[in-house]
Structures are given as C-alpha cells and as structure tokens.
Image 1: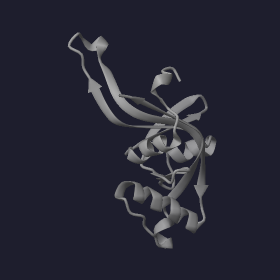
Image 2: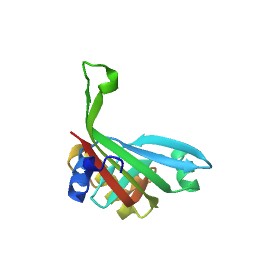
Image 3: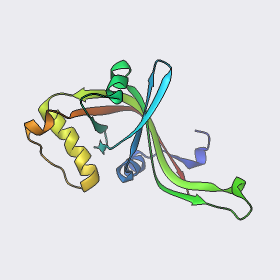
Amino acid sequence: MNRSEREITERTEIDQIIHGCEVCHLGFAVSDEPYVVPVSYGYDCEYLYIHTAAEGKKIDCIAANPRVCFSMERNIRLVASDSGPCKWTFKYESVIGFGKLEELTDPKDKNIGLSEIVRHYSGNGWTFEPHELVSTRIWRLSIDTITGKRSE
C-alpha cells in the first residue's frame, strides 16, 4: 500500500466498513478487456453474496473468468482548500479485495445468500420460497485477499 499510515489492518474494522457501504464495484478481466459494474451485495464476514439475472454481461464475464476484484467506499467527503484545487483532498474509508465467484445452486445455499443481501439493506434476514429463487442466480464471492484504507 502506497500510504501505509492509512492502512486498516484489523479485519473487524474492514468488516465494519463493508457492512456500512451501499454498493460494491466488481471488476472483471476478460480477454484483455476490463469491465466494472456496481452491484448490491450481502456479507456474512466470510463471503460476499451477489445476485444476477439469468443472463447478461456479468454472467458472460463470470463464465470466462470467475476471478474478480471488488471495491467499496463510505464516508466520502471532499475537503477543499482556499489555496486552490491542487490542495483539495478526500476523506474516506475504502476496501479493496480479490476473490473468486461461485454460483450457488442448492436452494438452501441460495436462500442463505439472498437472505444476506436482504439483511444488508434492511437489517432483517428473510426466508424465500423455492419458487422465488428459480429465476434468480445467487453467487458467493470467496475472498482471497482484502485491504482497508482510511483518510481522516
């Protein structure tokens, strides 16, 4: 990390940031072409969960290369300087990580993943009927590496 004094090393702090963000940006690399997409997500302090439609560009990217980079940020605030924009900066907390997406096909696993997504935004888990899960694809992101950064 370039600015080591800003690094967050405690996983519990990184987990708090993840729980406090609203959007996760997934970065895909397929055939020398990058693709970044914002997604809603859930997090159980071990895995990230996302959902997708049955088909589309994300599905094509995952099929070609399930390894992804992800990032999220919160508490973003511009700090302007009267001496000009070259002295402006941002205050923020952010997380960047790498991992691999795996589709969940077992209804029990899909229920867990979708419930985590709902819990992230509502504060409450949910149980879904099997017919509600048929048209939704649920993915679990296994995190290989993760780093956090804070500028205060």
